[in-house]
Image 1: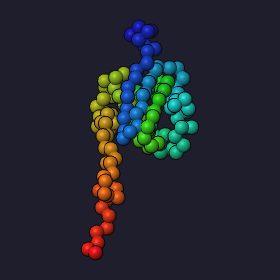
Image 2: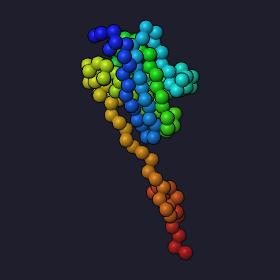
Image 3: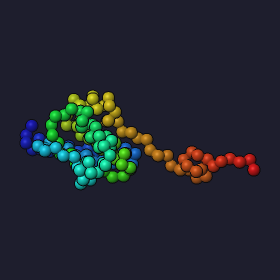
Image 4: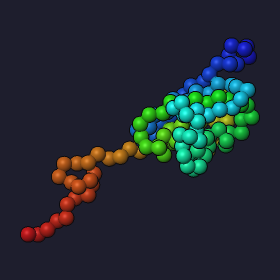
Length: 135
């Protein structure tokens, strides 16, 4: 690989519910994980969400160091973490095809397309009807 291609970033999009994450990985000497211009530990306050966002990277066993930058919009904080995981898995597969099998078995490459069903007119929620009374 030439130095120009070696230092080039790889970008992919991850999605979950209404959250969209643009993930970029760049080979680097010092590893970093930045989400919306904040460190991942600062952006995701709970340890569970931090682990969820970085899960694709930790399970793929790629020894190289990367500078990971993410721009994420929409959805809730949990959906954003899952969108980051999806996008990160896609970038790692683009970087190295051999991790595809591992990540596919874990379900990180699959787009979870479940969405909230809209509320219908005359109902209290999407499917919940008002209490029926005979009189």
